[in-house]
Figure 1: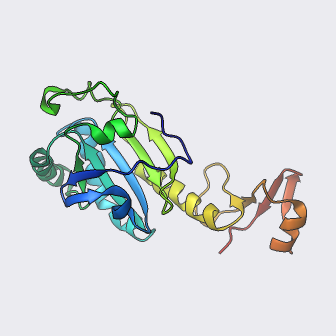
Figure 2: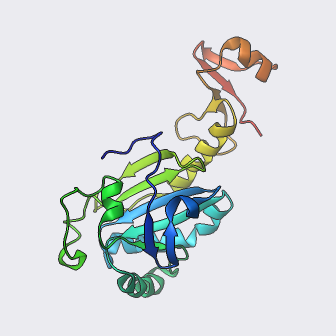
Length: 219
C-alpha cells in the first residue's frame, strides 16, 4: 500500500508511551505529524527525537500534535528516552508508538505485508524503510509525505515551514513560492481566474508573466 497526498491517513489503535490511542480520535481537530524510526537506540534518530522535543512548543502554537513510532516495545522506548534526555538535553514530550507487531508500519506502507516475528530480532537496516514523516490535517487527509535514508537526519524546521504553508493555503486562495517563509510574498493560486482575483485583490498584483501573480501574504 502506497500512501500519497490526499489519501485518508489510515486509522489504527496502538499502545504508546502515553497510553493506548485510536489515531483519528487522538488527532481530533488538530493537525498531526507522525514520524517513524527504524529502531530504538539508533544515533540519528536519537538526535531527531531530542530536537522534536525541544521545538514542540512551535508545533503546539500551530495546533499540531506530534507522535513518534518505532517497532520496539514500550520498555525500550522508556530506556531510550533517558538516553535522549542525557545526550540531547530534552526527553520526548510526546507519545511514542510501540509498533511491536509492525501493524502501523505495514498500514502506512513502510514495511512489507510479509514482515513478522520478534522486533528484537530485526536490525535498523532491516527496518530502514521505517523512516518517514507524514503530515495529516484535521480532515485526516495526508498533506505531506517525506521519506529519509538512515544516514540523513530529518529537517524538522522544514516540516514546520511546510505546515505554515499548508495552513495558509488551506485558508486562502494562494500558493507559496520557492523557499517561502511566513510574511513573504505569495502567489495567487492557479485555480483562481483573473476576474475572481480582482474581487479578492482589488489593488491588483505584480505579474512578471501572466501565469505568475504575486501578492502580499494574506493576514
